[in-house]
Amino acid sequence: MNVHSWSELNTAQRQVNVDAVNLLHCTTEDAGVIDADCPVPAKTQARRKQILDAACDCVRKAGFHGASMAEIAAAAGLSVGQIYRYFENKEAIIAAIVAQDLAEMHEKFAEFEGLDAPFVETLITQCAIGIDRKCEPRRANLALEVIAEAARNPQVAAIVRSADAAERALGRTMLDRVLPAECDEDERAARGEVLTMLFDGMMMRAVSNPDADREQIARVIEFMVRCLLQTPALGDITPSAAPLRSGVA
Image (cartoon, rainbow, N blue to C red; front, side):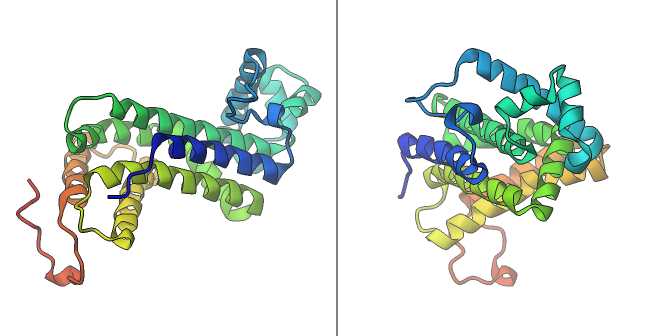
């Protein structure tokens, strides 16, 4: 079974930040790259967080196009010049937002490593938490704004796609531990993609149908996740000829 090491995952996380920095021509210190050889001072981290929090609030209200650097500066209680000391442009702010989300994902997976419960059960019991997280209005609003901007802006699209590649690497190390050994590379990638669709799609549903019964949704999602993780390899079986396997409890 091909299992990625945690050192490889850390490399993937650093790489998405480096890609964003190279794309936007920012300096290592200003961009806050996660690099043990060049740590970011606490004061710089605090200032960047102050700006990011203000930027996120502005974007939720007016979108990335509607949120000017002047408005972000005002919301942060800073001058526009101070903003540009930490972020070259709005694309750099998006890169930082995306990197933050990736860091949260990495931390969550690291927590899983320290649990004693069977790994499949650990993942499934996290479904309800994942649903609440994805459906949280402020998070869903911001994530959809990032995706909308990526559809318009090639620079943002490159940032989002780089982050997505790093997230797939993180997710793959989880899947390789639990998927049936006979699943080939293509099927492993496809199952991972379907899992991502399930949870990322919740953000759109949270906007379209905010009153949906999350408890019932969680029950169905838990069943679907168990199927995706434990159903034997499909091989050459066509969808119409693939009944639910008895091996899925």
